[in-house]
Image 1 (cartoon, rainbow, N blue to C red):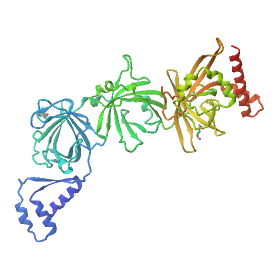
Image 2 (image 1 turned 180 degrees about the vertical axis):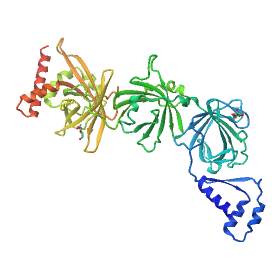
Image 3 (image 1 turned 60 degrees about the vertical axis):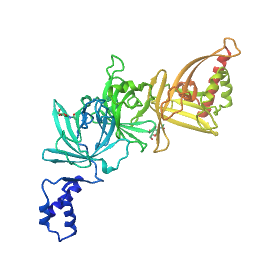
Length: 531
Ligand SMILES: *[C@@H]1O[C@H](CO)[C@@H](O)[C@H](O)[C@H]1NC(C)=O
Ligand SMILES: *[C@@H]1O[C@H](CO)[C@@H](O)[C@H](O)[C@H]1NC(C)=O
């Protein structure tokens, strides 16, 4: 008897559950508390057909559910007939001790309403041929006393026509009573392994060649695993739980799409906690170490609905980079001076340039008033800025933005890491060293515009001017927003010209810069006046 009691104790520690004969219990407590009990007598009272009682440990540690490889579609029966709807789905949660049971309504069957339950697996054991599972089953969105949610399951794994099925019966109360056959529970299920799980696809190789990607805005990270078909998304916001995103199928973007190009559309299964569904994603290859992703904002229940429910090409782009970036040459190298500040009315130009720029600006007043509304730019009281792209290093991979703020000149050096062009606009990933240890990675956009302007007051007077529009580096790649552009720049020449000029001049470099700007200013002014 002592041995049984010890075994009970041991079981309770191991498996969270123990079966005991009911009459054992009064004895057990006595056996531990009193030495005067007649062991023999108590044991004689114990009958072998006594009802088994179940004891569940309330704070037990969950285990992985024994149903391997969700999702499953399932049929169920609450005693009024079988509901076979294909959309009855048992889906995995990130936590593999949980399974989400999504029931669809079956119109002609009593008690077959649509609802969702969360199963959490706590223990499994074997008794003869029978496999048992203990778990809790909670209706999603309803508060229930936890003792009431315990259910016992009897299950069997079956190989049928090359498919794996599970036949499962569920107890009608928080006990394992009455569970004798897999078809005679208070509720029965047949889980069928979904075919769709077998057609897992792979994410594009140009994405998975790096296992880790970071969102430029620092909000989240992508980690690719398991033969390149699984993506784990982690959020830097601790309130958000991780997502498992499994590639489900690749979609053609046009009839001849080989789905290997630099733009790949796919349907993926997303699971976040127990919130699961399908999303449509588009991956854009930008550079070896830069990709962009667009993703539908809603999850669909069925995979074939994912791309039609919500077109991802209308969603904003997320820009992702790898942990190590290589320096690349910057687009549009050259030396520029600011003609105008597009979205920062508080920035002013020095007098020499103000006069020079006045003629150019006269015809643009309407445009400028419009853009003054979108005021967001460098700090107050900053004067003009000069910009050098690719002039200071042999690899042409540095961009320097010079600003004068509070009479102090402020040079910010950025390294270029990869660029791409979309409809005439160049996007470049740049980084700057904020301190010895802290690095900031940003996106800058540029656009060349050739403009011909009528000069007011002079019949037929025109200026032809190539301008470079430049955005302020931001932690996302701005597209088509009204305040996208910060600087409007005029080219002052290619880097080499200025370097040559520097070597032939004995003057200090800052003096040289002034004279170059002045002479170009005069040249442009002369050409304006001569027309
Ligand atoms: C499960 O399948 C078995 C064998 O085909 C069948 O007898 C049983 O009724 C099914 N149960 C449910 C709930 O679909
Ligand atoms: C930042 O620091 C690294 C390492 O010291 C250097 O290689 C890189 O050129 C620096 N970047 C800029 C923009 O100065």
